[in-house]
Image 1 (cartoon, rainbow over the protein chains, first blue to last red):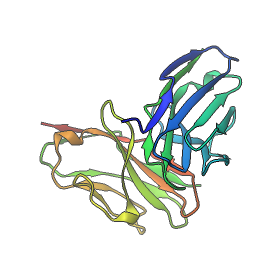
Image 2 (cartoon, each protein chain N blue to C red):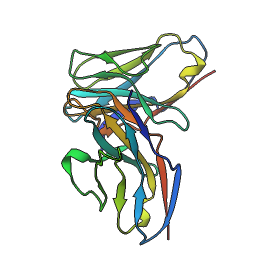
Image 3 (cartoon, each protein chain N blue to C red):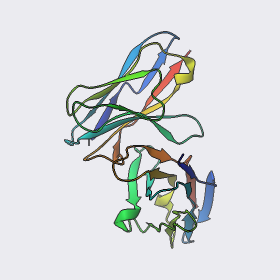
Length: 112
Length: 110
């Protein structure tokens, strides 16, 4: 059961390095989201894409960029990683705007 | 600003006992409320939404605007209900800004 697929599952970076988190969904959903979850915290929205070709900032967008490559794929890029970006990142999707329905397994990212 | 509070980090109940996971919110408009669940080694998933007024896996939740609450209830807990539960609030139609609570870990004791 694919649903929402995130890669990689784990990653360790050094401060200042860049990387892209990949997300793909196979449910033909219009909307996709990137969240981060820090210990003891709820999920916080980084960016979202209401539909193919559009992206918008969420609650905590600083330090990130996104690309909605096509309807299936929504990537999150860290241009210059900082220790404060150490977190678990979740991608999600939904048929229409509003609440995410399907989540990926998450990417556990550590920045040293 | 909107806020979601789940006052219990951990809730332990015996199998067959009633369950109530508390969720309080702060928002001045007409919110949409949701419950999400994450079972061990599974993905986070949407459990139910208040606008649907549905019962999923025996769970129900009623939006109480007077008390600004959206508690999740089940009359008889099952072991398979053990999971992490998150309450979330959306500021309403057209909003993508879903605000999550910190979550409550439900442990059902056999």
